[in-house]
Image (cartoon, rainbow, N blue to C red):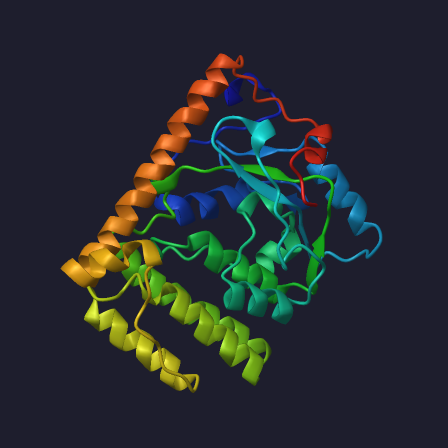
Length: 300
């Protein structure tokens, strides 16, 4: 209802076709030369798009993919902390994808500014997926690009929602099936650019990182993941839990320890979120974001 109050904003309501279906329905309705993806509960810096478009003037290419810093928050924006990682720089497609997979990194969706030409080259969102739909889509966008251009001193705030997020796997078999499919696609995309030892090692690290989501409840997906690893010249190790849960594992086994880890992380996130919400209300509930905000708690 708030959005409908702005005459420049067009609000379109459809049946619930899921994330990918919604994105595919919205794209033909958009009119600009550049696409900005933004979830309703995330925040853009006022100058984010302006700075990214200014950076384009230096390269004059519609196939450059623009990114920016990002930081998670619950309610109090000014306490968000921007922490640099190895993706926060200009990179070729193969370097970006191999680093992301080797180091288990990502860029939040709203950091990107995508030209219409590049979005068309990447193709539609994959409606088969129920997990990591955005990761698979932007993997194809990076693949179709001439490289990424990182624009500092601006960015976005991502509202962390923990176990309530669509990116939380939990015990969902549907999401686990989708995870394996998107892993296969990521590996296929990266190896289409370069099939070197460093790329295969990055793919192996990527599979190993996510293998714990299958182990030991889904032996069928475990077998497929091991086959993927063997195809790359490696073998997956039994997942390791944090030292904090080793005593539970010794007494009750891996499955119980894994569930304890998941529940503790869920509980901790819920407490932090509730505490931050209470402080947010005490401080007056101000969500304002200004360009100056990026000089605070920032590593950019």
